[in-house]
Image (cartoon, rainbow, N blue to C red):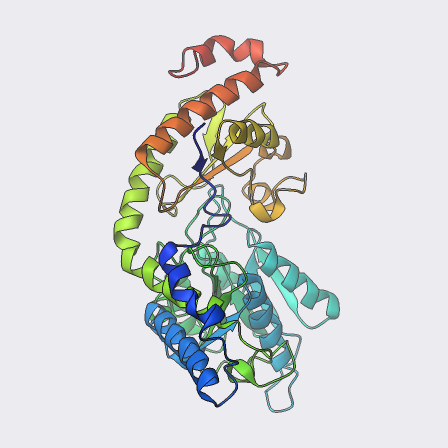
Length: 407
């Protein structure tokens, strides 16, 4: 049986060169980087080199990079740390509660963190709507700004439908007209494919994770522009410029640095290659009656293709495709075990009953043209078989059977 992985937006395999780079730091260069002896110094050098690799990719100073365990922790540190800073006696306190602006389609890490701050009474939050393609309006962002607005947090690429948000445009607006507002972007899905130069984006905070870019799980990072007030959320030692206590996971950090360097080096070529595969995948599936693309046709990341398949359950499609050797997702991987409608699709105006038929195929460095052709064939067959069990199938049987690949 074929084995085709099309769930790269959920997680990626660790690149062999990343593993090779990490290996010495497990058993040879194993010292505690906080110690000043040669074992500790060598470990510390590995951390320093990785920080340099990441800062070059983001076009920032190495001191502006803080290591975390994942993007979720980065988001918690940036949002809670920033809002907490406004209660510090040395920081000017707004006349009212700090105000956060975010969107209704953010990752749960952002949404739940904002809800937590609201619940504690530390901040007020505005959740911006999106259009039918999952796009945030720049005009709506500006309209939502108040004198108390402290933080705006918008994801660069949506993890479910692949919509690319106008981060650079919003960043320019804030820098020009509202320079006192801090701007955060979740670049988790963007880093391998889009320019994440923090100066071009005009962001003050940028979060990312390793396991989406062929590094191990358990390591991530947060760019914090110099001068942005962030209070650490994990107390203890003085690691990470006193922003995150705890002995650093040196092998994972080294792996993250290597992975970032690799994806940046291959970004242009790989984005172009995946875009062509994505185009073929989308064009072949949307001709099937009852299958519609979610997200925009053009303004989308090259690795995500997402659909609504009417009269079919997403979980059933995912399991049957798995039986055929294909890994896909139904909505967000972080929500795949929760049988509720996707908050992203709901915000885009998709009915709950339709969103249960969501299907996401996400591509990566090992995806081939042959993989896509096989996946297209299998999706069509699975949809046909599941539709046969649907009470509305009789109305569509003739149209479906005419679609190439469904016989």
